[in-house]
Image 1 (cartoon, rainbow, N blue to C red):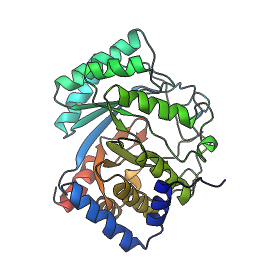
Image 2 (image 1 turned 135 degrees about the horizontal axis):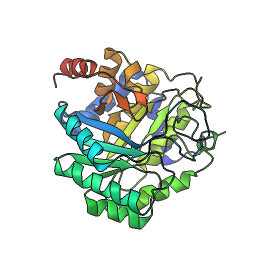
Image 3 (image 1 turned 90 degrees about the horizontal axis):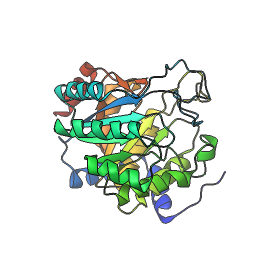
Amino acid sequence: MLVRMTEHSRRAHDLYRLPIFDLLFEAHSVHRKFHRLDDVQRCALLSIKTGGCPEDCSYCGQSARYRTGVEREPLLSVERVREAAKAAKVHGAQRFCMGAAWRQAPDGEPFARVLQMIREVKALGLEACATLGMLTSQQASALKDAGLDAYNHNLDTSREFYPNIITTRSYDDRLATIRAARAAGLTICSGGILGMGETPEDRCAMLAELAALDPQPESVPINLLMPMPGTPLANAAPAGPLDLIRTIAVARVLMPRSRVRLAAGRVRLSLETQLMAFFAGANSIFIGDKLLTAPNSSAADDEAVLAAMGV
């Protein structure tokens, strides 16, 4: 399927196709202009409600439609989340993210419990981020009032490739949730996943869609697919290291003020690839041994990367 070309996507495509050293030079120059090289934010991500999601996202081990071996776990208690946030802060986290496997954030007691989780995280002096599925404008406002800083809602891929990955929620549904969160005064965390069978043009179109948001997302996580047994993408061919580096570099040039997050899949990357990703413009990592249900890099590996960077 052809990807529609916009001004942003043409720019993204031109950048992506540059010789790698030219692209790295441009991206690193932009990065130095807008960010300190020693400013690498550490985030922790906790699954506060695991499994049983009715969506059919082809990459997700938490979908109720697939037999993945992920055990369902109901919404955690406020106390468990508070303790997890405390531990994350001790290990250096500056932002604490909470993810729930819901299609749509619920109302009633579960939502009230999430609001209290946010208050507890903020009381610890951490930035608070949540990803709870689709939001109404009223829910977005309530999250903001509770102290939430950011809402994560990834676009995942291009508009054109999206129906190959998800059919239970439209691309415009995702954009509507982003708009609701923005209207409530929340900052936006939105990015994508590499290695789902998309083309470079799809990656560029996704970045262009994000870059066209006004204002642009404050946070752009770039994930490598972590294939989950039992999902349709369990045997997907992985994206290569240079696919990741090019995507991060284009994101940095198109969205110079955003924090570009080296997110899921980092456990598969060599030290050298991670350093190149930071040179290309990444300035955040997720710490902890797990990202929702996927394994993450060890604390020792994290320290090795940061030490090599002089952070």
